[in-house]
Image 1 (cartoon, rainbow, N blue to C red):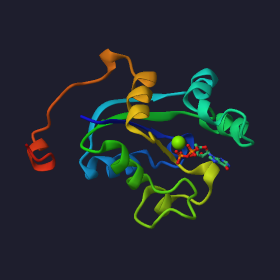
Image 2 (cartoon, helix red, strand yellow):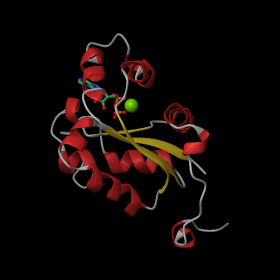
Image 3 (cartoon, rainbow, N blue to C red):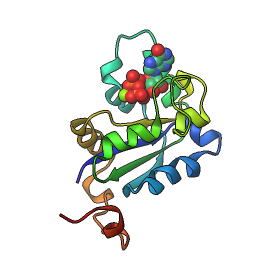
Image 4 (cartoon, helix red, strand yellow):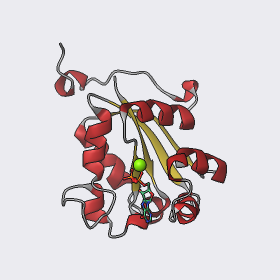
Length: 151
Ligand code: IDP
Ligand code: MG
């Protein structure tokens, strides 16, 4: 089953939107397999956002993501990466469609509330960067048959 890493960024936590953000992924049908409330270290931030090292916004991005507690969530489901990205909306909140998290709840790129993995490979890598194997829960929901069509 495909996996994706979601982060409720510090602005989401500070604004009291943690529940609202998680609710949208749960309602979408994605299955939570890991969740924790942490402060991201600068070292982990530099690893997580390594692809952006050297860009002008990189120092501000590391300051932002390490500025307060975050909620890190591992999700599983059919097409989990693309479905979660669509629920999150475009990186620039002014381009994000209404109905998405960023389109409904955010205004600025540097305060865009939530992270979601951008590819199937990165979904796997990012879940493993933030969760030890014994922090992930393998389980079946009683509703799985109403969300995942058996083949
Ligand atoms: P994503 O979060 O939609 O995957 P990325 O391009 O991977 O977007 O950028 C990672 C994060 O870096 C963004 O969510 C945003 O917080 C921040 N960011 C990206 N581009 C800019 C920028 O031009 N100015 C300020 N912050 C940026
Ligand atoms: Mg990204």
